[in-house]
Image 1: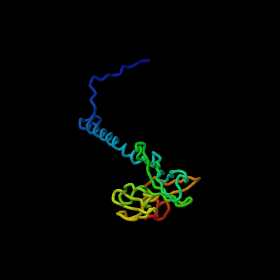
Image 2: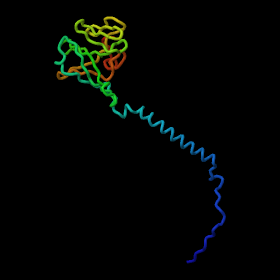
Image 3: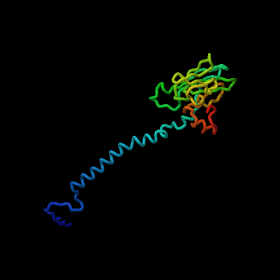
Image 4: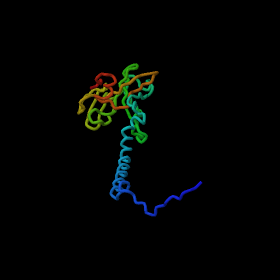
Length: 195
C-alpha cells in the first residue's frame, strides 16, 4: 500500500467576499439580536397580564355563592350587618377583601341583601333602626328599610345582591358589586329590583 503525500499549500486562507462579514454587518446582526431580546423581555409580562385571568383559574369568581350565616342569625323584621370575603381577591388584598352588607329578613326565608355602598358615590351607609332608614354620612342620602330611595342626591335605591337559602344558610352571589347594568341583569335577564 502506497501513500501519496498530500500537497500542503503555504498560502494563507483568505475568506471569500461572500462568507466574510463586515464590521457593519456584525453590528447590524448584534443590534437585531439585542432588540429581539429587549422585545421578549417587554412582551413576557404583557402576555402574562393578558392571560392571568385564565391561568389563575378565577374566571368564575363573580359567579361564586358566599355564605353569610345561618338564617337563625337574622331575626325576622330586623336588619343586620354581615361580612363576607369577596371570592374574587388577590393574596395581597388582605383585609380589604372583607366586605360588609346589610341583611334584612322580611319573613321566613324571604330576605333582602343590600350592598353597604350608597348608590350616589359609594360611601358606606348605616342602618338606623329607630327611624327605619339607611343613612349615608357623605352627602345625606337616605333610604327606606326596603332599600328604596328616600331623599338626598342618590337617584336610585340601594344595590341588592342575589341571594339563596339552602339548608338553613343564606348565601349571596358576591363576586361583583351589583350595579344597574351589571351581572345581575345578565344572570336573571331582568332589570334589578331597585333600579
